[in-house]
Length: 194
Image (cartoon, rainbow, N blue to C red; front, top):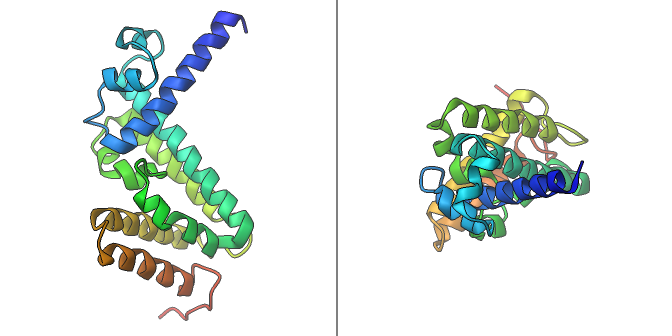
């Protein structure tokens, strides 16, 4: 790859990273191309040298943010199994972060209302995340358990962020962690299913 091709690839990567952060802070609809390009330290005019449209950029940003979430969960699972992944995801630091790690907790409802390219990127991240959540020891027993666990984690994070600054917010995080640790999903004592 020539120098200009390398520079273009690095510029594209910079734009995607800036978009991933900006979108998770502001939402998809509220994120303007001018603001994203400014966050990347570039002018708006250069956008179309790298992307077809905003949907392409958003899809790539969702994929990049999702990959970061998967890496975070995978590292936690490597250290302490499923319960450690739950604790890392439902951490107060994740709730309080200006830019949430997880794109689903940050802009999940925006993704659901987005163009097919963005939805496809979100579905791909979800598939990869569920696969990683089920890897290793002390993992969810079934794919259905992994889906239920991650849905609980996302929902708890959204509710905790809504109630941030209140004791309810902490209660939501702790209740979800406790539930997942005790359930047949985590590596705590197994409950009998009815």
